[in-house]
Amino acid sequence: MMINANILKSLLPTLLASLLLPSAHGQGADHPLIDRFPDSQISDLEFEPDSNYRLILGSLARTRGVVVPGESERLRGDVTKIIYEISEEFNGEDVYDFFQEQIRDKGYDVLYSCAGRDCGSSVYWANDIFQNRVLYGPERNQYYIAMRTPASMGDPAHMVLYIITRGNRQLLAYLEVIQEAGTAPPVELLSTQILDEVSEQGSAILPGITFINDRQLTDNAELDALARELNSNTGMNFYLVAHLGGDQDLEQLINRSMIRAQTVRQGLINLGVDGNRLLARGVGPLAPSCIGENCSERVELVLRPVSE
Image 1 (cartoon, rainbow, N blue to C red):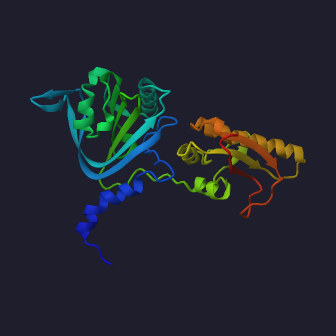
Image 2: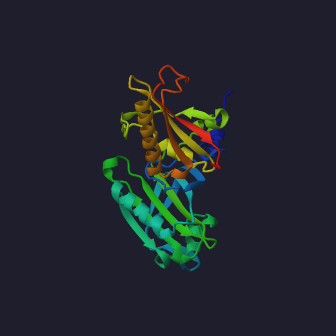
Image 3: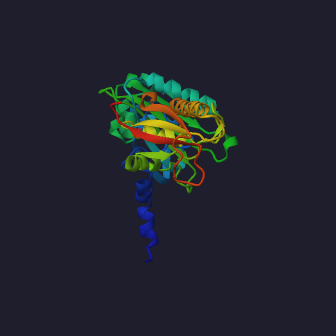
């Protein structure tokens, strides 16, 4: 069946948004240019292709009934918008400091930043700039950063980050990423394949988990995506069960497999997963049966009751 090109063009933003929005099981994945604050959850995600965008580079004020920034720049490109909800055990300054450190580490150029009342009225940011009332809060609780990727990274991308603690103490970090029009949607839907499999079968073999030695994972061990997936459903607890075959005696293999399970657990904790949700176990060669041609050395995620 042929689809009229004009109809397809009009449906494109809706189709992209449906691909990018969080699934029923969890949250969307982070934008590849910037990492979320640990343990934060995506509460909203949008993608607007080929949009006109005003990059705010100064404090906001109202002049003759119009909200005007001290300075701004016009851009055009694909815009990704992500709202992260952050635990109330943190405050806005914690989040601001985290992103500032990340920006420095990545070598991004800060074009403008402000905090508190120096940014202008929060209602201006929420209603006039971001057009999202959920981002309104007391002026003293706001932070704003506008930044740009360096030329060494290729086509430049611009980003803005707005952090606000609302009157109900809800802490939000709002990210907008502006990239050259026509690029592929930059945020991928977070796969929930592992959690789906664990929910249905009680366990799942973790892909991409390889070791240099029992206490050290290889650089390409795929823990980042797993950590995001585990954090997408904090109501589930697990055993990390390492299996290990070989010619050593049983006690040695069990001890080594326990160390491997602990190594994976610590790696996930380092990526923001709550360690209380993960119990490490090593069974050596005692459970040889598995699905696959070569799985004598594997790590499984096994569902355990939340009460344990």
